[in-house]
Each structure stands twice: as structure tokens, then as C-alpha cells.
Amino acid sequence: MIGQAQVLAALAAVYDPELDEPITTLGFVGSCVVSTSGEVDVHLRLPTCQCAPNFAYLMAADARDAVAGLPEVGAVRVVLDDHYTGDEINAAVAGGTGFSGAFPGETAGSLDALRELFQRKALLARQGRVCETLLAAGFGPEAVVALTVADLPGGRDAERCVQLRAALGLPCEPGDPALVAGDGSPIPAEGLRLWLRRAGLVSLSLESNGGICRSLLEVRYGVSDPTQEVALT
Image 1 (cartoon, rainbow, N blue to C red):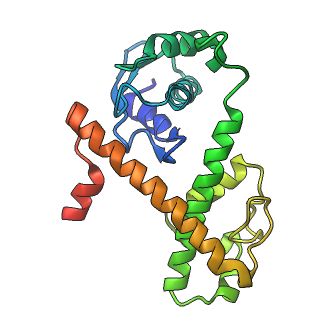
Image 2 (image 1 turned 180 degrees about the vertical axis):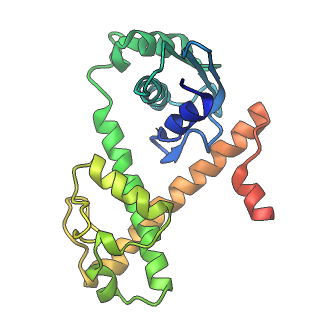
């Protein structure tokens, strides 16, 4: 029988598309209830009621898809609470009508291009952090660019890099280059420093936005920031 732990594990694979962090670690899952018959009721909460509707929709729709794909699950209900377009988004997610169905006449097509844009930003940021780790470990630029995916250090950043590359259709097999540009080509050693500066700027932006969201969520719902708790221990 499906249990809450399985549902939360599925939700942990749903990422805030702008921050590239799981909605579970961000504290966006307000509640998760699983009935004895396998029906699942999930409520999502965001840092403010004004969070961008496109990102809010993606998280709600992805959450529903993730849970609905579990074996032995019954009816799935995902509700976005306290959002100024919550009624529209909830109806579209429940009815499977897409983002354009939530706002007929106001938008056209899917959000695939938006998702891809932020996946590319996330990949650049995470690859940059992996590269910094390798350089700090004593690898020179030539050695770093000669590494393959199989040589990547352990850790969430490296793991997420492979996931993002697969989602974007970029080479991600064990023998492929450890670091790649947006078109999938290897990063040249002579261009590594410049590429790394760009990655650092994107990473700083993502981390700053993530910190703001955690602070706002703490003020709004009293959800403590786990990154601050780790920093204090």
C-alpha cells in the first residue's frame, strides 16, 4: 500500500524551476495526507501570494504528475494554497488543461521553453560549483576539462548535473566530458576561467533568490530555514 514516505520521496524529485531546489527541502509542501485507500492530498505553500504564476503552476503540475506516477496510488489532489491565482492554477492542474487552460486568452502554448531556460541556468551554476570543488582539490584547468562524467566527485551537485544534462538532451554518459557548454561541447581549458566566472554569477543569483524565498516562507508560515540551522551547528 502507498504510504506518506513514498509520496514525499516522489515530491522530493519536484524542483522549483527558478531555484533548482526540491520543493520538499524548500518547505513548499505544507501537508501530505494519504488515505487507507491510497488517495493522496497534497497542499503546497509558496513564500508569497504573489509568486510568479508560471513557476507556481509548474510546481503544482509536476507534483501531481510525480505522485500520480506512483504504483498503487489512488486519486491525487494537489492544491496550491494562498496564491492570488490559486483557483485558476488548481482547476487547471486538476483538469489537466495546462497553463493556458488556467488563463485562457492570456497565454499560449506550454511552459517548456521557460523550464528549459532555467534548467540551463541551473546546470551552469551546478557545474561551476563542481568545477570549483575540483580546482580546490588540486586539479589544474587541463586536468579538469579532461575528466569524464564517471570521474565526477560524489555529491548532490554532480548528481544533479547529470540529471539536468539528461533532461536537456546533452551528453551525460559515463565517458562524456565532465563539464559541457550549453550546446554539449566540452569546455576548453583556455576558456575555463571565463566560463567559471559566468557560472559563479549565476550560482550567486540562484543562492540569493533561494535565501530570500526561505526568509519569506519563514515569516509567512514560520518554517525555519534548514540552511541556517546547518550553519549554526
